[in-house]
Picture 1 (cartoon, rainbow, N blue to C red):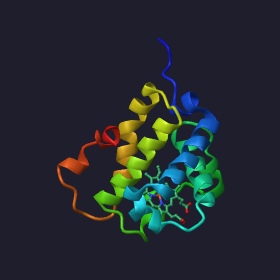
Picture 2 (picture 1 turned 180 degrees about the vertical axis):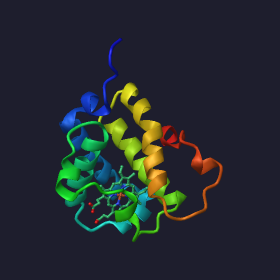
Picture 3 (picture 1 turned 90 degrees about the horizontal axis):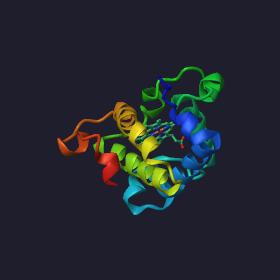
Length: 142
Ligand code: HEM
């Protein structure tokens, strides 16, 4: 039986870096993402790097983020921010658009959809989900 490839193998390190650059470029300019954009530092350069390093490990590649910063549970660095369903969905919308704009295959998009929703929802630290916003298909709707 053929072993299933990881998203890291499918996208490659350069692909994940390009995805994160595009993700923050979208966050920086998309009016619908203004809420989450405002939480971030003016210079998004360091976050492009950090998110890429984190996602490289999370997607099955080398644990660059963990070797630099230790094994960090993603809820911890997000504690200072107000992250409710709206902020979560803004983040997912940027990621959904970034996957499309960087030409990610349907296979990789399908593979990432539910895990990305789960991690974004785990980072959420405010209540208020409605039935509509807890639907993992939200990422496909953007
Ligand atoms: C759900 C909505 C989310 C919001 C609103 C959000 C917002 C933020 C903000 C405001 C920061 C600090 C940025 C700065 O210092 O300029 C941050 C850091 C970070 N976020 Fe998120 N985030 C979200 C989801 C996620 C998810 C799902 C992941 C991972 C897949 C993630 C990964 C990171 C990483 C790796 C950092 C850097 C942590 C560190 O300081 O080492 N975030 N996020």
